[in-house]
Image (tube, rainbow, N blue to C red; front, side, top):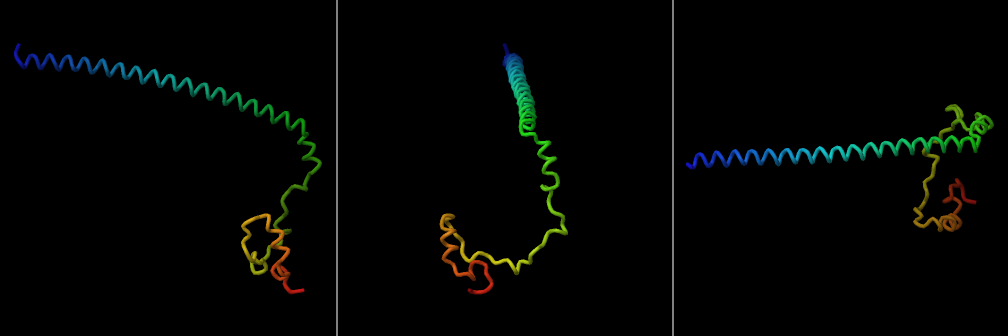
Length: 125
């Protein structure tokens, strides 16, 4: 056999082998994609079931708490005030804290020992 013929046979077998390996690889990728798709469908199904359970629980809770009658009883009391009812203060009237308190437990003690003028009062007593 000549070297040209042996190289041709080698490349034909190499091409066939690579195509077989490629087809097997594509089949594996397709199987993995199907498995991922099944997992996604299962997750979507359980999510939908949980959403239905949550809606049922919320309906039962609203029945138990009787939310509609509470809303009717409270009525307009929980609405935010009208803009004409709100009084805005200028920043000049707002006094910042004199010191930053690191420990919240010391807040009462710190405000108790402050001078009245430091507690927000305008004049000393």
